[in-house]
Length: 89
Image (cartoon, rainbow, N blue to C red; front, side, top):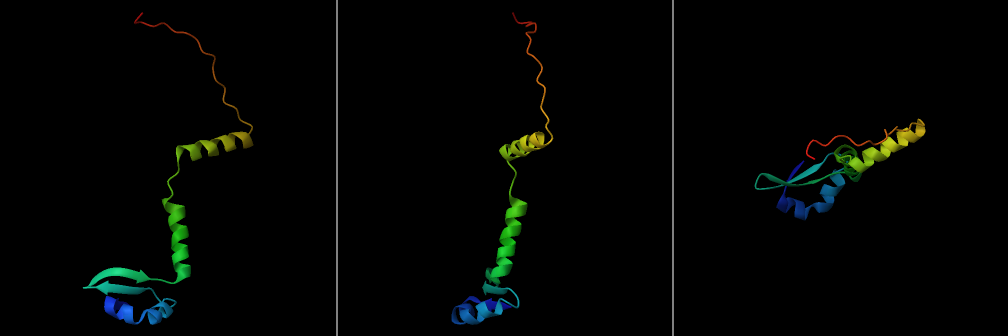
């Protein structure tokens, strides 16, 4: 439901009670300035936001890779180092 800012100030308790039916939108001069939603809906949004907007870090990727290598008993074979010709010498 749409409310003007002035109405929202006067009827805040009514607006909060109405959030269990649908989000309550508050406008100032036909511009949306606030939305009051059910707490459970807001918590679901926060969970979704955390899950889908968290950017994986390189540290986390390497930690997962190390864990997979440990689980699969995999080890990376590193070749021995050897000197090679340097054309600038």
